[in-house]
Length: 82
Ligand SMILES: [Zn+2]
Image 1 (cartoon, protein in one colour):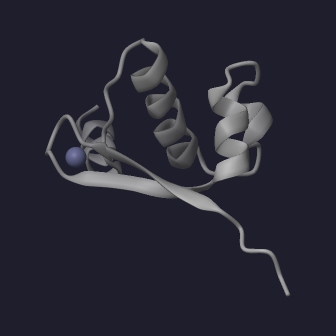
Image 2 (cartoon, protein in one colour; image 1 turned 120 degrees about the vertical axis):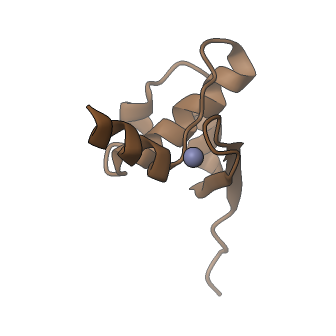
């Protein structure tokens, strides 16, 4: 029998449009990153940047820092305006 991969859903509400967004994360890696002794690049080197951003925001929400989550759509809007 294959062991189930345990995942948690990390969820944010976009500061710009109020929509919820998030991603499933392997709980083992999630805890590794949240312990704080590894960078997000060390734990998730192969994941896309928006995925890492969700994790970075979650870390800040727990540990302090600029917590400002934004969904992909709003990120794209900002990039178009620039
Ligand atoms: Zn948004």
